[in-house]
Length: 111
Image (cartoon, rainbow, N blue to C red; front, side):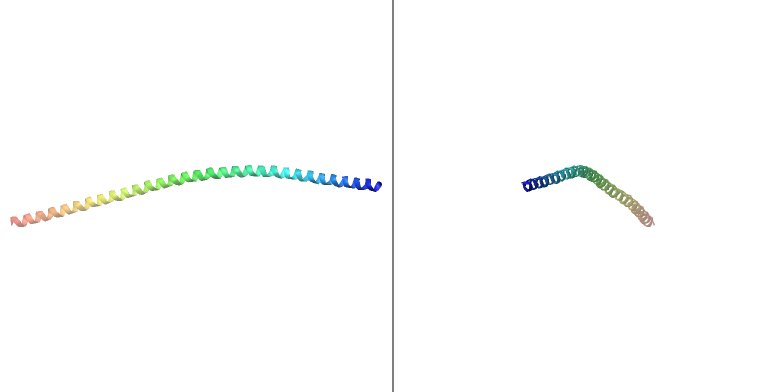
């Protein structure tokens, strides 16, 4: 009978050890779960911040694109104004040359 009791005690001791190991593993899993939960929250904050940064950068890009288009338009107008001024000067010079020619022809006809 003592063998049976010894086996029973050994079996109970083995079960208690298995329960203790199981409890330890459950505690470890719960601790790991808490760590992962915190890490997940941090990652979600990082993702949210990155999404906001992307949104801000897209707004900056759109503003820069609008500024570029406005600058390009202003440059085209400036070039056009310069061309108009240059054309006016050339036309003025042509009118003076024509007036000189008319004056010369008038002088020749009078003689």
